[in-house]
Image 1: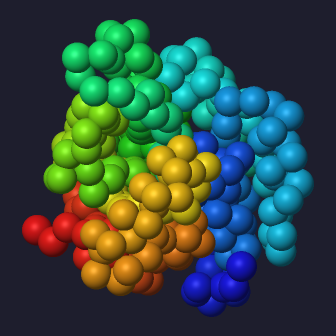
Image 2: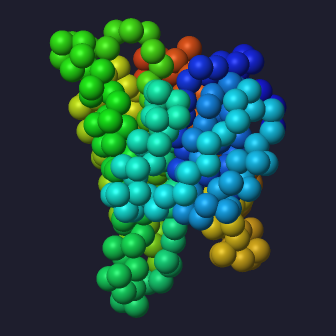
Length: 268
């Protein structure tokens, strides 16, 4: 993976990335680490996330591997605490973790619906809340409840999807969660403005990940034809977008926004 910004653009910063053992999450972790960040890679399985951390190339600081279920409150509280214990600070969070349980509404179980919602929406909420509760809000209180105008880079990037606008057959839970994440992004941007945290979301179209592979080659070819660029995105292309959103020199005056990265599949 190549540098997108200047070398060591995030040196001295700590970034949490969820869903980091594969796909988009791994590409994001790799890219942030390549730019100098201490990356805390969070995923469900300890062995897999440790293996993924060992595969990160060119990192200025060795990534931290943390096993956590993003939908479980105790796991998230402990994960954020561990990052703070090991690094002393958290500058950014990228909420990527997600799952699918695709089937049409009439055949979808309520358990599957709740599971998908809890991973996407619940995980985003829990990491958003805990980083503030354990780190940013105490800093705010120490500053006399005044805005943290200390020039420290603080950001959250959430992952939505083009399907939040388009809808998607068989994915009522996934699309509902992604639409809600966009609303969470805007509300968080307002509530966290005093912490000087920039909160934005990215809404990709189809991306070449293990999750997409489940639709089969014929389905992927059909998706390509719905984009103006005639292709599905690669994980590193989404990682490049995240890096730009994380950098205050690129996106320092941008918050509460949802960035479409869908190859022209949907244009608002």
